Image 1 (cartoon, rainbow, N blue to C red):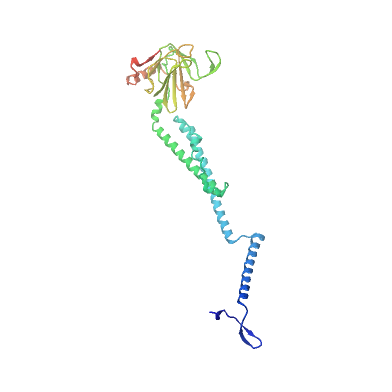
Image 2: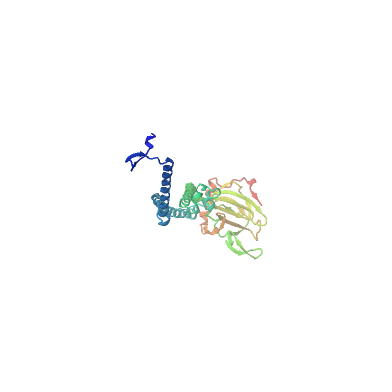
Length: 337
């Protein structure tokens, strides 16, 4: 192997090939300098290629092309997500303003529709990409869109559940007058809305309708429901009944003389529940009647027809009583004042 490393050169004087005695170290040093020169030349070429002529390497060109392709795909996806968000927003608006309102259900709050988006940074693993990264923004939009769609789906499930009971809704809406329609028995002394307070003559809002009548006039429930509250307020409604009809509806009957039901009782439309009186803050005997929808008072006149034939009203009351759906309290349990 040692002979393989030897080099020979022609001696011009003797015309013989003689062993080259040049130092191996010198040859090594010369080869090393040649290697360094090659590296320097490559670096110079790379610098001129990229910095002076502003050209890109083949690998950079490939990566740039792939990045442009993915960016184009992300832009198309974001455009589609914007379209889907508009559709979902329209569904949410229709859900709140039409479907849930139709069945007396509360609107879904923004907190419910956007639940699960705050708090802990669930996208910490994407922080290195920066806030303006297409990948990060698309991931966040997809996550929000999925969760909003889930909330909307659950809302529709609730609506379907209520819809299956919609047959009961018709009987629960307070749609008859609380007194017999015999106009010889009452007159409306105060309507719904702004008025002068009859006790101090100052401007005030009247949340119901007052039926002036003699004490002891029968008061009937205006829709199926459950007695939510029986109460007394000396400086307000006096003795009163609050009935919860479900589907967002409640009714109040105030200034009563006698209460014929108790809290928790189920009551039917046309069922006798009280007698008119003069308790609480009044200027004379009357029935104060309110309709409350979605926790706000509304005009009761929009829900009943005072021109309903008296015989038809009496027949309805008699039918409820004959079906055993009338007064459930025994005489000694009834509250009279």
